[in-house]
Length: 622
Image (tube, rainbow, N blue to C red; front, top):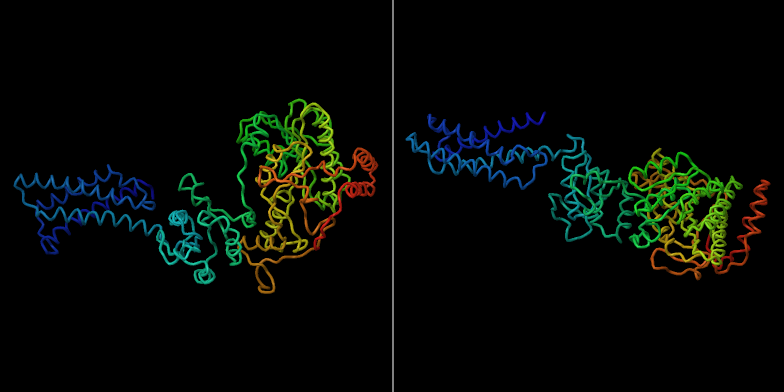
């Protein structure tokens, strides 16, 4: 119904209510159901709504949307009825002065009380009918809210009449809150969840994150994922700008929340020191890490940001994204890091001061199947960019490395270790020059959601109904979020004095089998196993692929690592234990690549690492 006709209907309802209130006032005062109807009484009855309706309009009783009528509106209704009654009393006084009859003194009082009850009661009754719902009638899905704080109560109010969720109650671990009513909802114990889910047919639980301490969130999430319902979360109430957006902020739980990594706020001083007001270049700008670095950099207001990328589509995509949110000068450069002329022109033309080298082939099986291309891009691409950066007096060069560079068993990891050794060599040479140049590497594990990583693959497989394929359920990997990795990379670069290999704190390694099970449960499905062989999503073990390790490491030697001023960043002195100049090794490797001798190239890759790096001192199981 159009808004105009809704107001007309409401005015008509108020007129009828006021006339009924006046009739009831006379009936109560005179103790008869059918008071005598006279001309004076009909005239006064007509005046009652005539003076009341303009007052109601002036005080905004017809501007409010009944569905979202606040409880505080009762005070506006009381004020409106009081003014309307007093205006009507003045008319009564004038009528009595004219000798047209006498109105009993209690009638105006009864009229005020009954009119307030009818005008207010009908509005709040209509609101209750509009927003309460029955589940079946409005096709609503029953949900529970985990948490009993202010954010949970506000969420419950916002969900009334909005969308297709019907809040059955609140869940809380605090015994003091259990059994109480908060915001009109009963608070239940988390231990009762299995029974409550079965009784009410719950398919979804919404977490009010501000009501759950950070230290307890992983345990809560782990417990909830075992219940076979979908889990969503609500951000802290302080993060919501306007209450009407509260429902749209409900989102699915991400896997990084389940890992329980403690978050350390970025040191803005280090970020500004590294990039603010400087000409910054990012190679591999369209990749997972490269694009996140670019998003971070533009927020710190660099003088110029050069996007260097070999993929035309990836370059176009990140350029358009950055131009839409930032007025800074952004320069896209299409080219490969193995093309020395293109790299040199980009650095020289724009006067690059800071360079983040993120361009690399990182997919282990693909690089294992394309050894020569992996070496050409990861090793000689790094050598090309680093040499040109040194010749063009770039102040800071940061290599994005990988935990697979530690005692590598695959070509990708070996090429990243060679890249680290190339950067170390450039750092040694930089110390002999008068210009202050810093060359360093930052080594970390997997980032959640990166191109080619296991998390997006698992999501796709779950969306298709499975099975979820894992190489080995006992395999462990380190994981961190892409934005956190980008922040730590920039901060590590700002801490470098040259020749460093920075190690990012990745937390505890995650078992791949547990990761797959948790992602299945987070999506609201059960894991198909011996306990439930006929339902859920199955996990299929396909075996390790060529070159894959069961465990990953971040250190060659724990004793060579030192803390920095940042609690999530450690420094390993790459100069320590440097035993040989790799120039001859590079010449031999280049010859093998140019002659397409893949077997010799592979042998050279691992031969240098065996000669350069110490053997492992502690033998791990597996």
